[in-house]
Length: 305
Image 1 (cartoon, one colour):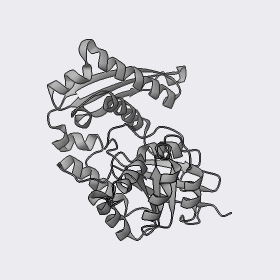
Image 2: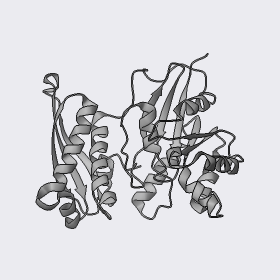
Image 3: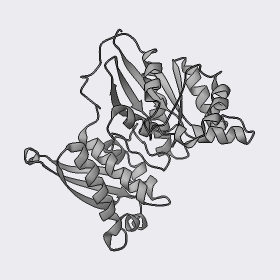
Image 4: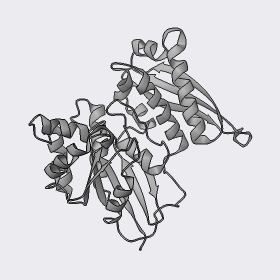
């Protein structure tokens, strides 16, 4: 069997499970995952390696109706990726589609139909990925697949969370990639830096544990990544958690510092697993008013589009 490699974009609405799928394919957590929509803000590149192929997987911010300049940047990132890939995997939230059919509604509502139009217009090979099969009875799957067949004949049901159905996705993707050597070393998992992934892991914990507007008003900046003792099995990291208001800072810190301690403990455990060594993690919560409109900060954080 000839070796194949190429680039595939994971696109879809917020909270469809794109980052979870990327992490499942790569085998490591390189993208922030949260129960909240719009967790991904950057394009995150992971390398899905098998003996027969290498897929450069681009996870993107969810395609959505942008109501701020910051959200528009996120959508611009997503749409820009579509001009650079060999194929598209459109991740769909299967329980939501089942609910739409059961309610007599169009299986693709207004926002989803807009995504369909953007994707179909590209004319690229398209794989429809029905995610979260673990939440839907098997008998409710076939009507959804039948309703989507006119968009693409290639439909793969799977559960990114349970990591089931990935072999079917591998077969589907391999058929649409060009025959060529691997684009990166096959023991490499991502082109993102450790600093970027560490910031993502910290932001993931902030998003998971804070409420209301706080998750969407935060960013994480790695100020110091001290590896001078790494050979001895230790890394020292200083990170700033940026918020826009004093009230948000108080929420992230929590009463008696309990929230920031919880965030730090969980993030440190994840980072230690990533780096394979002990981690000292110092977190500082800083108010940067209107940071989502600050071109300098957005550039430093890689969010300037």
